[in-house]
Length: 485
Image (cartoon, rainbow, N blue to C red; front, side, top):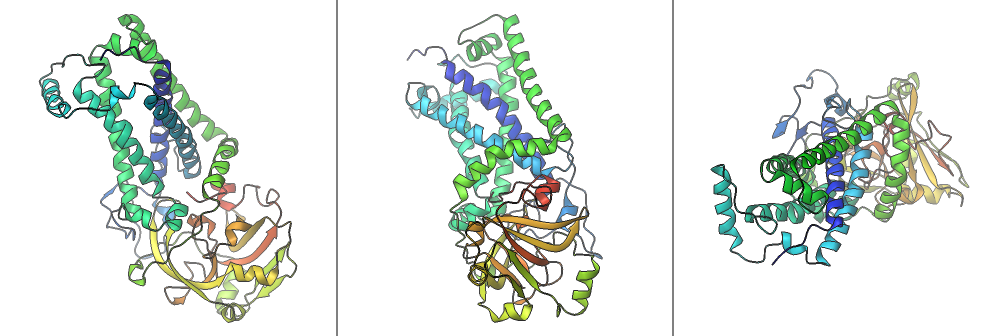
């Protein structure tokens, strides 16, 4: 079969893919820096990682939190670099939206034309021919020109386009608390979230190796033909090909340098701009995701990281000294009936137990059994007014001189496994994990699950609370107000 020149949509999709794949790789490295360790099990016990990118050793004689494990990757490799997980995740998910959209359009156009025959092998004879081509490359000879690819090129592009790309989407999805909570069977396909995280990392390495080899072969083998065909759809001269290649490189560098500089200089602007896409996308995809987790107690982790240093305020220390005898949970705001509940009051209410997996935004996981009062029952007692849209959970903890708080949509608060937990693994909550009371909301990342609870307020809007971003981590660390992935 004689193939025409690459159509313009293939050439355009190729360029868009280059832009977003570099943003994905660099922002992925920023996400990795928050927990620069990879595990093959979901318990994430320190010392059992199969690979790590840090020399830090956590002390055994004093309290440390998971934030202490973070590394600061250089902006030369990570986007944006310098311990900015919040914006790294923003860039990663923003790039995913457009990378997937670009890929979907590419697939549709590919299979509604004859172009699929360039990539999809149609005969088993391609296997021995690919082995023959590989041996030629190994002997520093080039195989004969294919239509338009030789056998090993066609197989490689087929694997990258139809296997590696979907594999990255599948393993990335297995790291979403909303997806895993709604479909507990899904992460088990990969033997758990941490194995999916490790496989996702290996997939990234495969993409990096492919890009390096691909660029090397483009420049080493029929350089002028390759560059002319992928840009103009026809062969060009060496000088023009060299100029086009330089323009490609410069364009990719400009986008990445701009993304890094604007993120480091105006992080709030970048956070809010990217959230216009991300918050809507998460709302569409995950607003109906309700946790259906109920793991066996045999799965409970022997080690569960602490994240966040316990409150240092005089008020909290006095409560601690009295074993929380004077502690009261205040429930107020846009409700028909305000409440003040002691621990004894909560113990007397309906008790719910659940064994679920905790997903920290940094990347670690652990499994624990929780017991407490369903928020559904609190809603029945306080009766939120019709105009209430959000629920503000406030803590005794202060960080960066500001009260720690998080905001959740009222609909998320209504989920059956959203509870106010006062027990962990059959024992009263310890200080590190949020005593006397903490929030559990199993479709969200851990930073939404406020510890050391002080009060619950029902509001119509949160723009006048804190810095107006929807939570303390959103205010200070540029996290997203929606934490389902």
